[in-house]
View (tube, rainbow, N blue to C red):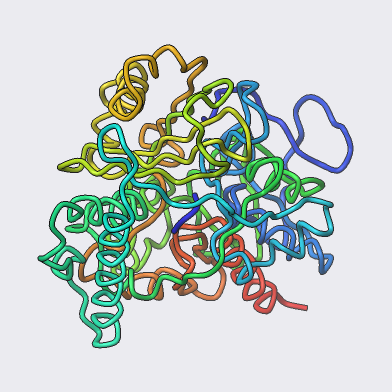
Length: 439
């Protein structure tokens, strides 16, 4: 349902159209200053640059892309450590932008498969799961129509039998990064559905292409945003910058813990919204399985019918490659990260052993894990509204004095949790900022 990601320590660098080396001095004054070079920051910067107004994107990490990053260890273009699918692609600018760059957004042909021990689920068992998902979605949509904002767990049908835990995992931890007890029915009902696409060459690489040529400076941390003066003063680890407008695209958890000081402070309802839209946890284990001995279909989605929430969703034979993405979500994903990389890999491999026998362990070659929850500049996967906080996205996207905007996947009302939603929100905030600037 969603798409959604290691920041490496390093030195100051600037990404521009041509090669530049060494330290790059920040401007003293710009029309628009953008905090963060993820999808929202890139979308905002493209919009500002397109109309000829001056801007700079200040990124605390040493790369661009935020929670969308691809092959960093030589696993190939099918390796995405974060966002992998372009959710509801037609609702985003990405199909057109991909065509301009000569990049294919390909349809997803892999089917969804259930594994029960050593066998594939039979049609009747798959039907029971599909019907359970449909019944749950209908209950969520009805709650949304009635304006009911409670925990999604309250809407889970009680007659799902052996697939009840799987339905709860698929909609909760797998898709939202949180258990259903921490998912707002109203927020979930508003989430937009559509046809997803996969990016040939990887989602992270695609977003990096969209950032080429933009005035992005990495390795610089924003510490304070002061709007008490005529212009907004932004204090950074590399000096102070004045701007006519500021767009902040940092993750909700980063802002909620006060990593950036706002002067005057954020309004109380926006402070509350940052907490109400806290990040879920979705972590990935990349497994390289040469030769596809388990005969996975390309991009096959594999779920396991097993009790409890200790499970993963597999995206197998990703892009026709030897890679399998094994995703955990919610509190179990947090437990795995706390246990360490070895524990994450061991659990993912244990699911293959349950399904294909002990020889599965020997079939796995290289591995790679994520730990988004531990990334100090991010802190999780993507926002998901807590029960009672279904309207917080509207609150969070409201401007501060018409000069400072918060923008990102957390502020999109229907495409939250997606790269496309973040990009659109960056464009939206940039449009409002540009309109507010003096001519």
